[in-house]
Length: 206
Image (cartoon, rainbow, N blue to C red; front, side, top):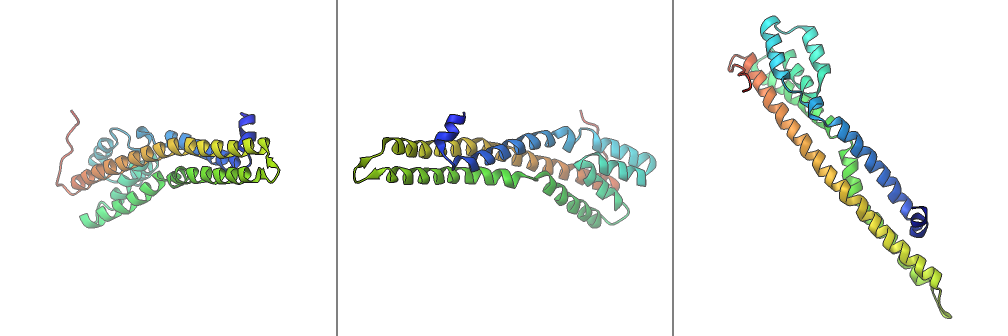
């Protein structure tokens, strides 16, 4: 591995740093963006049951807000349960935007790495081409310099693509998961609004 890095020259180091960051972000987002942590099953049913039994209490709202991102959205609605429907929905939407922003944390960085890695590899290719041209002299070609320039060009191009492809795959995957979570939270929050305002009864899941 060290020999490959040595053959690729100094342009490979920014790519190595980008690859380490990308791997760290992929692992972190994989751990954080789990459905049981974001949209726990049965949470809405528990909230509705507690609301129907004891109403809205500070303890219920505080516990719910600490439970999960979905809990934060539902807690925002319960804080405004006495307000008109539009006010309650607006509070939920405001909290939903904050939660969505938090779920998308680091995804911009991962997407940026996926986008710029091929360009960084291309930069290494240009450096390699400069070395290749530099190997030419009036007395002939320096084989060692020529081989080194070719190594720089090819290794950096390949490594840039090697970073970009999985980074883009995971970026798209995580974006899709976040969008799915947001839609699910919106649907459950809408049910809570209807239940609080007496327009709907929660039906148990079959």
